[in-house]
Image 1 (cartoon, rainbow, N blue to C red):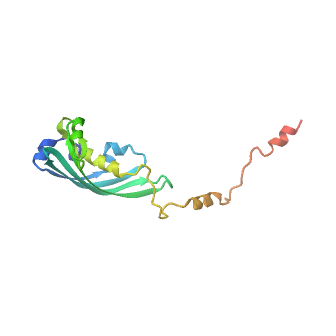
Image 2: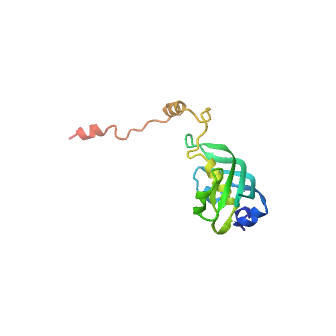
Length: 172
């Protein structure tokens, strides 16, 4: 059964009624985020406030939460705090974007319908880094520490299967 935040809603009815919708969403439930390989999990919560501005349907999207990602430097889990606010104009066609005020971000609402999930996904995708990495404060092992660990002698005997190959080739 689809979640209420994932259903397409009528933009005009929401904006005329100044609807306020609260959400609490697991990131793995959002289709465009579930395909990101480095995403382990996390959740966001927030509010979408619909209204009208200059005759257009608008939505104020506020969200907070955390994403569990895989650091691409050390390949260990990391937590990224998410916090965002955006005011969007809900447009029925791309042509309307040219007449939009600079303070509003355009979002296409085909056939006058949009789901809260689409608004959440867009804001979260803009908040996520292209390459997730721990910050430079030493959370990842330094490259020197990683190379020292890989250069450390091990107790295993080194196998050299071709060590006597030269001797065998010289025998006639």
